[in-house]
Image 1 (tube, rainbow, N blue to C red):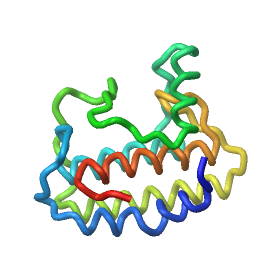
Image 2 (image 1 turned 30 degrees about the vertical axis):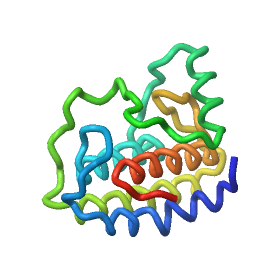
Image 3 (image 1 turned 90 degrees about the vertical axis):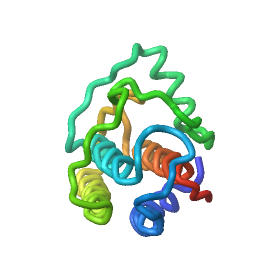
Image 4 (image 1 turned 180 degrees about the vertical axis):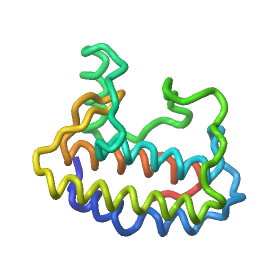
Length: 156
């Protein structure tokens, strides 16, 4: 894995500015979510990553072992990676606009880092990857963030 602190710094300081550079009307390159739906989706997964939204593992142990091997790699998520926890059609947005959704996402990211700082050694349960510590949570969120940035044409 690349340096976790570099990935954490990206999530803390660079991710939401990149999202703010997107026009709310930009067309996705794949998938069904628009920009605001994607940002709200990311907030949901940051809450899982911080433990604020408790989760249970949805795969058997042998599948979790394979998904964890992928997680520690630098391989990106494939386009249209299925998520069996999401409905076939994106859910309605919660916020009045994309800027409000990005503000929520930044707040959730800030909370995530504060929670892990206050609780060193904390483990959270991810539905696909099992029990994750700080490093693995940052790795997953960084990988997930770039997956959705690429979905809207932003590349590393």
